[in-house]
Length: 321
Image 1 (cartoon, rainbow, N blue to C red):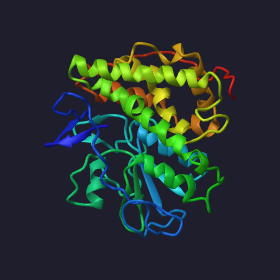
Image 2 (cartoon, one colour):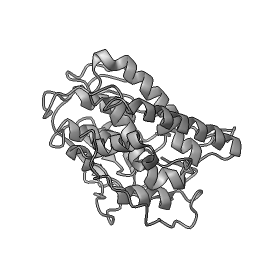
Image 3 (tube, one colour):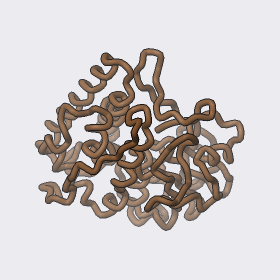
Image 4 (cartoon, rainbow, N blue to C red):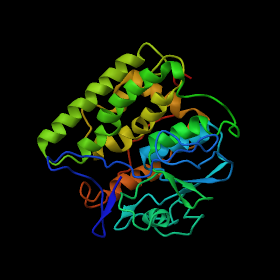
């Protein structure tokens, strides 16, 4: 979702072959129930109420995942959160609070997100992205990798969570991982590969793969409630942030316009069903989403005009609720 290069904010990363590439996250520690070492990183990050703080953007689909898990697990009282301003301009994500829902940095009173990275490591060189999971006790970043933060939220905090629902059950892990890989490569990240492609060939490759996956998901969802049957899993919760943004921004702004989400009956019904889960509905902020994409991506929308539409009824009844 952007980075600082030579003091200027860039809204994309492009490889020498003009295809969009996403940088690897730098902070890969894990919060665990007892503070033992996770799959990567160092130990010492024990799951405790009030110890951790989440920095997010309502606009960013990767950060959105963490907000969904925080809400679904009932961790709002245990993990605090601050929301950046939707506009990422010359210095990246800011803590300006003059937009509805933007909170400022109530933990360290920083002006910009990159300063949070510098507070953790003054020599940091990685991209200043959301989400960030911050440890108040050790005064450092635990992780800036959303796919790992949601797995921490899934189980590590069960002692204080309002529910112990497991969205990554052992019996379904292989299937979830297989779906996640395809959806991430061609859809979650695929929309960016379309939007930030710098050649026709790069765009054509990305948009073809994207809609092949949309067609595949439509077929899969015609015969079952969720991606893996009747049970809501991590695969659904990773897909939803992309789908809910698809028609408002990706279809037009990123040229993902072979079809709209609403042109897929099963996918559209499925998206509404997930949106209508109260905990999830509360994490969706369409004003932040549209403001960020249309205003911040100057290379795509140099006049920074934010469109009024489309009008989409996410509250229309779903057959899956």
